[in-house]
Length: 305
Image 1 (cartoon, one colour):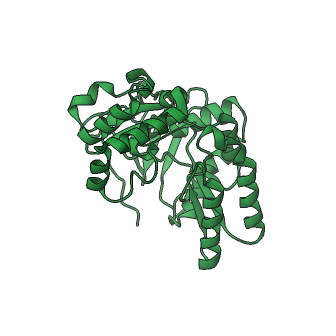
Image 2 (spheres, rainbow, N blue to C red):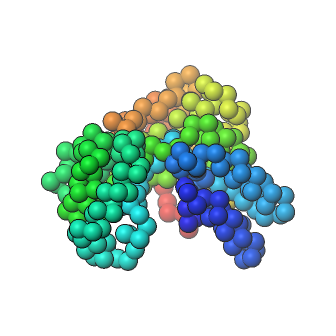
Image 3 (cartoon, rainbow, N blue to C red):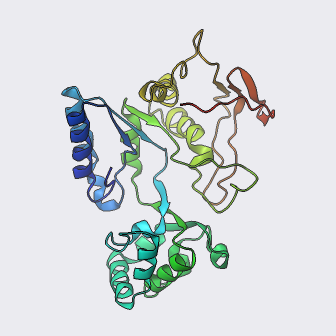
């Protein structure tokens, strides 16, 4: 959608209108109320979706079970600064007058805003030591604009940040909706090799065990079977992934076996590559890929088209 923060209600209405006019299903990726000033909008958002569904519009959504999001640092600058291509933006960030406007922009948001942004990964080797630190730890509010512009320029705009800007209460409301499935919103990472870099969001390694442990087994937000539906058959049906998502004769044998007494996410913002506990077996297309918590080396997956 166009927005998941200040303009989220208008963006949602626009998205639903497109689905209605085009006569196609609507999937919201991802359902959020980003930024404290937007937390109150959750009940309005859920009502808009329900009213649309009551009128026959098919709507689903997804969400990862964290109140922190991850995106690029330049996404937090005023929208007019990030118009155009990469070269346009970098040239703009060098401008003295633009930097003064960014300085005013940061000061209006205050120190809490700086402390809500954690640097996750930086392309420039010069700044690598800053990964895993909050912007407020690195620089003062007075110097934040100058530092941010220099960092973006030297990194060719490739600076990832984790933003702690969402509400736990709203998250639970969203996860409880029957049309909301669980996702990671993460790129594929590995515990070794070229993708093991930076301090990425722990959602890549922890989302599903976290959802089951924290929100289902500990908080009792939903029944376990409903939680499993949200991470298996609901997405398979929504995205028309045939013969997957349920255990059924004639379907592909994609099965995860976990111990409810042990399952727990161990990935954190400090150590995002920690693997979860309690996953006993993972079967992919009938072949055992994880046996008693350890990788077997079997690679029986395939690209789904």
